[in-house]
Image 1 (cartoon, rainbow, N blue to C red):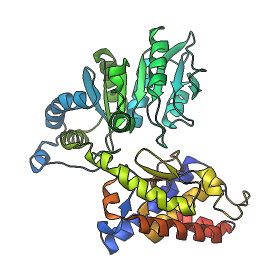
Image 2 (image 1 turned 120 degrees about the horizontal axis):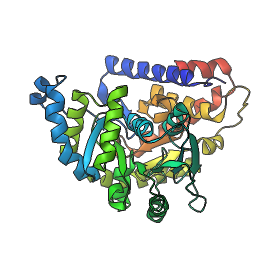
Image 3 (image 1 turned 90 degrees about the vertical axis):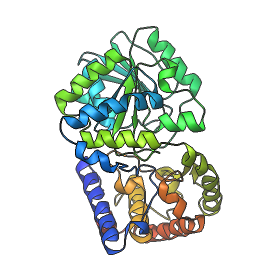
Image 4 (image 1 turned 90 degrees about the horizontal axis):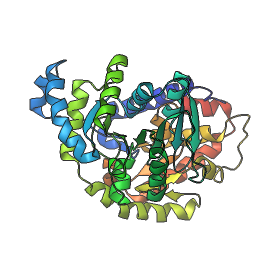
Length: 385
């Protein structure tokens, strides 16, 4: 086994970034296809640059952020954070004590790792549910968390969302919604209301997921909760710095659902072509995915004394990157990220790549994976470049 710790996964990510760096230096950015759906961007204006100072920046851009953030998410007050993970951590630190419990409902396990890690850091208890009939609030529950869309883009049902809200509100428990990509997927494709419009107290989204903003967190909610979380974020350095806040402002100004809506036709085309050769391929709201378990069906034989299925998925992702210029989350994701190979057709680069190229890349990556799957050194070489 190679990926035994977050440190190992960080080294895999570093190896992937070195490959990306080499491709850009030797060719250019147009030779890469980022299909993660997380590519984001930093759409600053020329006049923003001189304002990106320690104090002038927050004075200008935090004010501009308020109406834009409330339009996107609802709520009474908005807060920009270094990452969505930072906002979740700040919320748990602000609202939960070590003797409390956090109840988390999501449409499909597992949760994003930041949630259990943050609770463990505090020493509190954690209960996780993906069946609405099992969800409950205990006497020591201090916070409910709802995940709107999982790491693999499983979307919560509206009726389940409202049931969790009703159960929590009956016991006066504050509710945080982790709507990292859900703030756009749920509302644009599934026609669900914004989280704040369904009676929650706090919502956070990622400003690089299915929108062209920098990697950051945008939080909105009831004023009293946002004030508490903002104070905690400043205590631990979790708040967004001026360049990040400015980038979020500009991304919100130019946000349009058009590319997400256009992704539907391309998703169907890619799915139909891949399904012929890969029966385990599945649709996501904006693309296709091959989960670890489904990848196993494409492998001739996997000796788990050499590698496991999670590592097999990450090796395939590294092959897609190195040999075919396709960036997926298992290659570049942070430690704990999903190992599902997901191609997001709402990504900017998806407009430059066709179904035939992707199909050929998948076929070649599977062939190469099967050649090296039980060769320990070959697997190590691919994972860590």
